[in-house]
Image 1 (cartoon, rainbow, N blue to C red):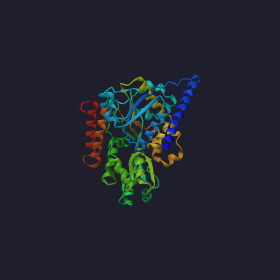
Image 2 (image 1 turned 90 degrees about the horizontal axis):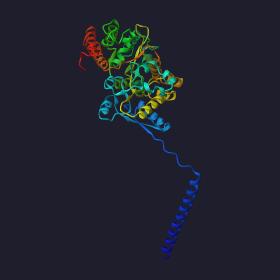
Image 3 (image 1 turned 180 degrees about the horizontal axis):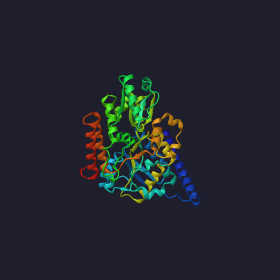
Image 4 (image 1 turned 135 degrees about the horizontal axis):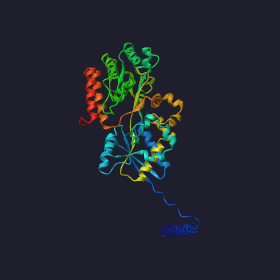
Length: 438
């Protein structure tokens, strides 16, 4: 009975204490309400859906994930919601059912988006971007995705073709410096084959982004002059020279064709002396090497013109139709933030891609560029006046496809160089003129 009384007294005491405490809190709140202003009204957040294809497990996706979190943290009135998906293939379908993102990263093959009138030009929002930021963007980046003065796609991750090489193999072969010309590259791969048996001297990606640069450096042109981009220009000495150059090395078993992941794996295993790729591919190859041997990077060599040449490929920002003006404006604010110097410096040091602005490059330490020559070489190539944007129309996508096929056929000996170039010229002209069904 005594235990029950003790328990009861404790319960009553606790209830009394809570009641007194509640009265005290109520009294304090009543007094405070006389002197404390009403809480501020919560600011409405504008949501911007954003689709892009880089997985967070790889450097570009990881860097972008961090940047979006940082933007959302520092911009309380805008929330960018990122979805990892292949926007280049899926965004148009999503638009048809009313579920397209506000903003997306799509590839340089954006002609089908333009044909569907699915994009809004960024030009109307350039007033939100400081002029210094726009002027700091490398010209080849700025022109990528520009159509008749309108910027429907703003380059986001510039992929630049370059060559990575195994310094240990170079030392065994007695090669003291990377080749500066295509002729010197051919000499070096021949020396490597002779002096370092069992090693693949050169591995090449047989895609248009890696075929056209040597062609351009030898004086080639993407389009026949005066054709208004309705004809290509492959029946030329520049094309014959470029196709024959690679054919000769292939026939002498001094080079192979392969894909990015396979090249990275074999390069990492020490089986390849020189590997074709991009700055992002450099990160892949260095991961594969894992400090087993020193790695060097070089720009594409100079051609008969006396200079090197390159094309920009990669994804870019687009603004899709059928969203509110507030969402479009918020997306433009994110775009402006992305091209600010500090963000570009972060992107250039974490993604594997070079910064796309001079101001971003200026903020990257020389020590980083020394340790990461893939980024340094890509940035150097971006600044070159001989680096150009790829054509955006849908038909040129088909031109590049037939270029890949005919280049491969000519180099591997399936066709003669002359026959391959004639077939390439004929088929490409049909695509550009609309005579061939796509």
